[in-house]
Length: 330
Image (tube, rainbow, N blue to C red; front, side, top):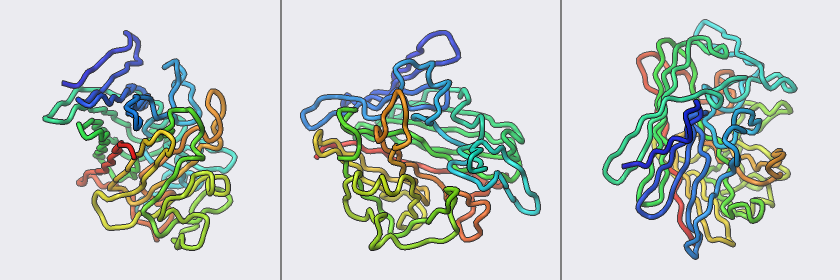
């Protein structure tokens, strides 16, 4: 059975998943947040490879989206303008300097307490996190019921499966905002190597919004089709959204490696895009470049970009997205 541990009797509750190989994952019901992923290095030493706060109460005032689920819509929507069919909804504008709606608004899914239930199947130890977002929360239409299944396999895979249903047309794009540091904080991530299975990307304007174009990465600083040292591209390109290769379904997205510890993260997802953020804007108690985010999601500002795949969820449909985080050593 999955090991489930309550931190205390307060609304903040913590949980731990363990597999038979010694890997463990800790989570909070607040924001469906990953607070730790302990995996071995090439010598077998376990360490936490995601950024986290020492005091769980600090997640209540976290400005960096550390380890949480973001939604209803990950990334940005231009001026909070949400057209669906013949209707236009006004979402909250929480990124005031750029007049954008960001990561679900002032009180997105990262700032909600989720209901948690235990799930266990052969070879998979997991937890279900459920949140019901009411109609017009942060301006979004429809009552949206979201369930996230976190489960851990004996292949050292953390699998995150998202599903959502709505009672009227809305938009959904969910992701996890963990910052990975496979050295477990011994150094920043600029010495890590990263490859992304994407031949194209979406260029951004000066408000960090996609222009609507889809351009080839070839012969640019954004080309990660083969391993690149993170420090070689991340300062010039702090945020980039990649159009993942392949068709619908689970497929390889990225490989992150720390050459010193030997730890490697292989990410597969069913999402169409991957946002890469190098963590350069992190502040105390963290450090710039202290972790790198690999965020599978729908395209940023998809509701206002007719050339992008739609992110609209209809009442007779189910939103589903799955991401595998597999850890091993090289």
